[in-house]
Image (cartoon, rainbow, N blue to C red; front, side, top):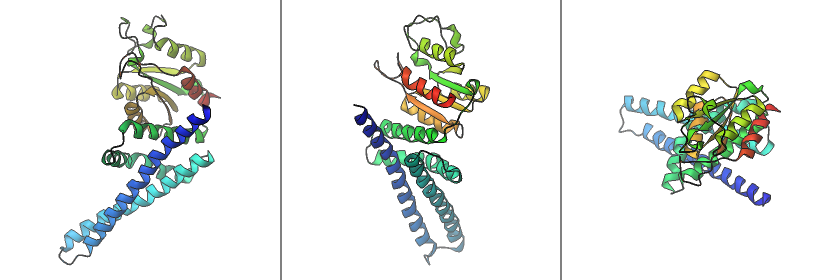
Length: 257
């Protein structure tokens, strides 16, 4: 069972890396087409200069992203970071992310599959850094949909409004906070999550959310490292969701050990 899970995780990571490589190929072909137009005799000098500038920008992006892709693969394989490749890796992950999603749509690949693959790749890169911090420097971000839908005590403004009845995962969040001394934020969306990041200025984040919110949060928080844990949705999206306490606790302990 454990071996099957490991194989599935590896396959998920290959999806994003493969689409990222395909994105580089598409941009490369586009650059070749632009370069061909630069030397077309029918074009004006001004038009050629604009195309030449565009081609130069694309070539630079391709070079950076190619080094970044190599850095991602090497970091995952060797489980250690490469300081010189951190910048290109950010270019590959962040700048090319919309193009990866666009290719996924063309090939009719489920968007959640691609985003989950991105989260797995990101988590591997964060684990490779082996960052160790103090508890007050760690922020645990959780979605408000973990709260029991019929609860009268809303926790988005103040998580201590929770009465710890045990009907939902908010009680587990507070137990983790009390056990490890970390900071916690319950967010209704990206705006409030970003506010918590600005207010607490964490050195690392453990985030619980759906694939869509996790990917946007990881990109927004950059360069702050984020370990993402996808939530469980037995009742559908954004309604009485749950999470793996074990996975979240493992993520917390990774940063604090």
